[in-house]
Length: 419
Figure 1 (cartoon, rainbow, N blue to C red):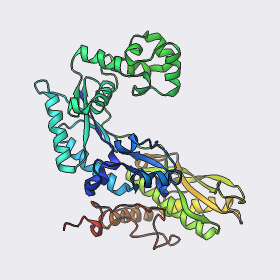
Figure 2 (figure 1 turned 90 degrees about the vertical axis):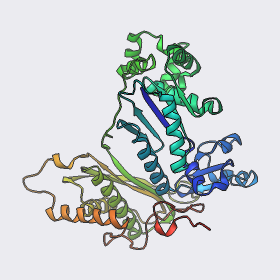
Figure 3 (figure 1 turned 30 degrees about the vertical axis):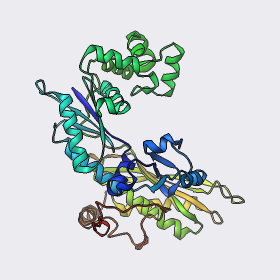
Figure 4 (figure 1 turned 180 degrees about the vertical axis):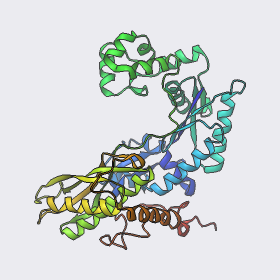
């Protein structure tokens, strides 16, 4: 059996843990630079606030309807997610962290356990230990666990936040209730094709011939059908595969116009990418640097450009990646442009231990030891303690965050004060 544990309104719930006065009241979370709505509490959804709503357009509505606005606080959300996942790992060693607020659990050897009761115990423990409410769906397969989770969340008062599909009757009833567009793995194009055929529910999808599904939806669609009829075909991925590309891109608080300002930002972005890459023990063969002007500034010259640079050898060195990113920036920088956004993307990633070496040029061995030391210092004392010379020592990400809460669990100076 599989269980899908999903944190309810996760970003909003994280904020409410430390500011409980907003429990039961409308809350929205804004994206980087307070751009648009990326998360909403149920109360905010009921008031008609759409996902992706531009904050400046809804500012008056937020005030009129008493909606609490928070800037995204990713250090807090990441740490709270880690705490939830650590609790889930106490119930079974087979855990796949699917996203920051979701995890699949596989229960092997639990034949004589009441898994629904285990789900209620799990839900209660997560709530008590972290303050985060969760919904849990339990079923013989991952796809069915997704549907069970939707039922648990939709009918929370009746299910107590936990629903188990453990009989054929429950499975068929759940499939008839689930619209085809809500099935895990059915995208917009597949939904439109299926609806054209008159297939509107998950149950109707499972009645389609295997040959048709394989032809039009590939083997992945066939696996999904097997999962929905109760035959496990989508396996648990306990080890997350390394990313094939890593990027750091940011819109600036204002606009930048000089090369030195852009150089500092691009160097910082390249360093951030390198740190992410070293965490998954990868090296890259190429990088892309791009810049873009402000498309909304009237009278400003529109400009966007990018440059891809192939590296002489695969590397994970912040020093080398910063050097090549700045080299790429020099080739695309233009005077007189008000730049609003820039970014660095690392491509051609390969495991560091398996990278191809060159006869004539190889990564500087001193860089390897230096990067290991930097990572250890940042792990112990926090990020941004040591920087390259072309980075601003007094600046990290300068973003518009007018509604930012404290990092209650990751920053000693910002821990909650008990009065």
